[in-house]
Image (cartoon, rainbow, N blue to C red):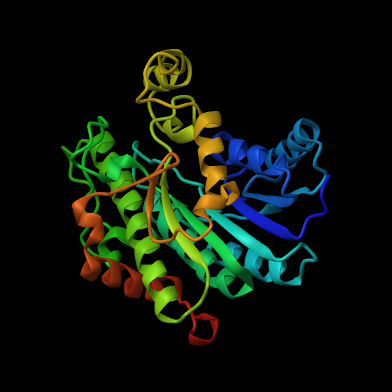
Length: 315
């Protein structure tokens, strides 16, 4: 296999979309070193072993990362800086969750969905930017659920401000927890796009040659997003809908979306594309609200404060 001169980090790379993307990049002829980042050591190492067997690529590794802990994110970035992996050319902010049964919190006291899906990735990406090679790329995995014009079956996002999203008011006695939890999820996916676009603007302004794009994998039945749903809904998501996906072009398998996501790094025709929102392999317009620069700047500045990003860590 071709010698490797570039690395890619995939958060949540031990399962679902992240795993399939790791597999596609791991078996590519370009010779990538693939690092999957996850919080369960056993699951990460098991995935590494399976990926090495299936791709024939021994340059697939695992590193521990808990996005629900800012300390863990900092430890991961510090470990990467000391590692002897090839220069970082790709970062895929993929790991995500939905919490719909109750309000839970990260180790830093943030509401979990916002803390993991947005704040953990925000800190990670900012700490790694200066370690990336020129022409590197950061991809934020978002979702078409951020767009109220799409028929996704999910409630639309509600963006307020970073402080409120991080520390929401307790649910009322008659709150529909599933509905409210899903709103938090779609809001986090909107935040992913705000962040991608704002990061792209700032990098261009500072003439830093790193690309940033957002990616919609589509509806992928069988992925881990339904793990906090009730047993009946989990059964339908994991076993019934994957069968329907074969006949429904609006649904995708994790393999299909993983191959599409990998193409953002493998297709030469996309090597200079930045600041775009991809639906699979096709750049499309994201929601009208996602282009609100004021909200994106508000989120960016608030996220710096919430993650305690230091001046000497900023690029």
